[in-house]
Image (cartoon, rainbow, N blue to C red; front, top):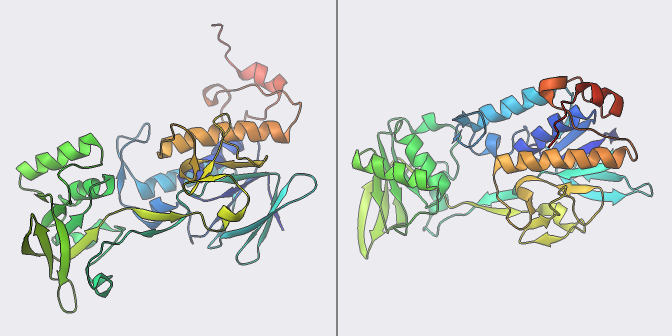
Length: 349
């Protein structure tokens, strides 16, 4: 039996940052993740993809963000159960929980933080005949190592942020990048759309809209794609076809835990991101509430408030005064009023 103060289900960025915020409050964390390594999608799907909206980092690779978060939380010595899926949950008479994985590993904690991102997921595949034939032979649904595409002809399909961002990124690596979207308008960030248009004018990206990929050609490996634009079909040479149409998320076993679910996400309040079951919180992309934004930085905010609430639940009646790391450092966080009064810079508004 693994015992901890906060059991975090999901070792993506939000789950990893929870370790740090909980550690400041002297709360121990243990993380469960079905993937064999920490980092969630950032490690599994796009470790080399640049992220632009992390405060303090104009640009950081997803894999590097994971490494930084692991380093930041290492001082608090979190535990990990990796390569196992949280399967069942049992509530004990004292209000604490036992979570058992699909491999039978049991975890006991008074607080559960579900930070499962999009849950278990699989790519949304386009309706292209025989696409399975070319999987791992020119067709990819994720980009893990951009170097695979160096000096290659790459066709990307999609209209969201992933399709735009990877088209921009690969334009400096591949010999030819073609972005295909079935509409003239894109769903991604305006800055990314403008950048793609700029690269099109510089002949660094071939932009074909409105159009769709309708077929794949090649023997042992992909050699070309069929494209249909306004009823006219053409063949375009390609070494790789990367359809980026998003993921089909599934909550998996967590969906059977009696939580309030809405559109495959867990409903929470916006005070501390607690679910309808006291002691169980949901943070990051896995939750939903009015005005929800699925951004990593929003998950960090939710993790911070969740940890504050968890501290109060675990220490009823104990006075907590917020302290700043700039004043107290890392070791000065113990939640005690006496120590806090020495460290806090009070402002009178």
